[in-house]
Length: 288
Image 1 (spheres, helix red, strand yellow):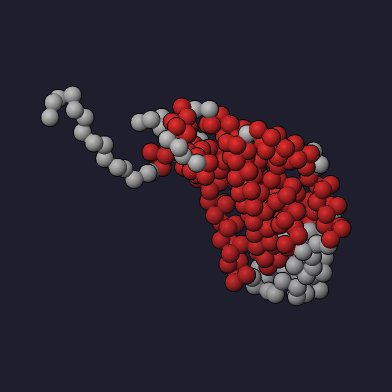
Image 2 (image 1 turned 30 degrees about the horizontal axis):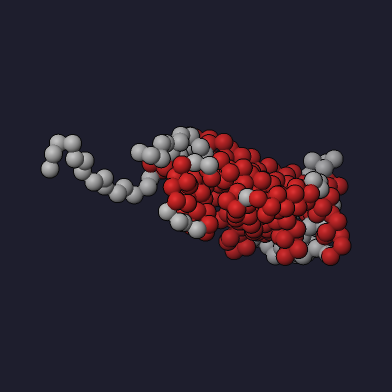
């Protein structure tokens, strides 16, 4: 073996440092709040001190006390119990909708970028037309027409944000599709599914994850807006937006029943934004 012969490179398991991602203290705070609400959405019903629809205090809009940590609502129901249960609907519906939107949008965007031609043009124009409809107005029309239920809310929110996910993924995939390693893969005779799954998708995964978080925040806000207008999750269940709408009469008196659901919405959306801002700290050279 000559001195110029290179030894084979060893395989290294990916680590956060190798992947090029690190988090500052603000990013860790964002992750902690996100994980907190995710756990509450999963097991919060086990810790509710009172049944969600039970009237537990004849003094409506009561203040914070040892018996009612977040006060009571306009009917005398425990707000702490309703916020814990509302997390399941807010986080669950938003997560399901953003997953459907991003999966559909990213797949269609990569396919359009690779195939191009009339398929790309037709699909882009159709989704552009859908993207031109204001999200809240579209949600109002659909939910008012077919009724409000959890499957309808999930599908409606997913349809609203699929065009944006498509445009974002397509723009990324078009850039990757012009690179030399894609040309080499085509010369080897690789088919479109291989190009999408093994060549393009790994190279756009980081921005797609960041876009996933941004759209999650948008969906939480639109869902809260629909619920505030009475077209979201229906009684006796309630998400955080519905809790705000139910107790809006107590706003002038500073009732905790309207303040704590607002804090829950703000903490979730702000923490996701903080996490996104701290996600891409460093991008390493993939050729190494």
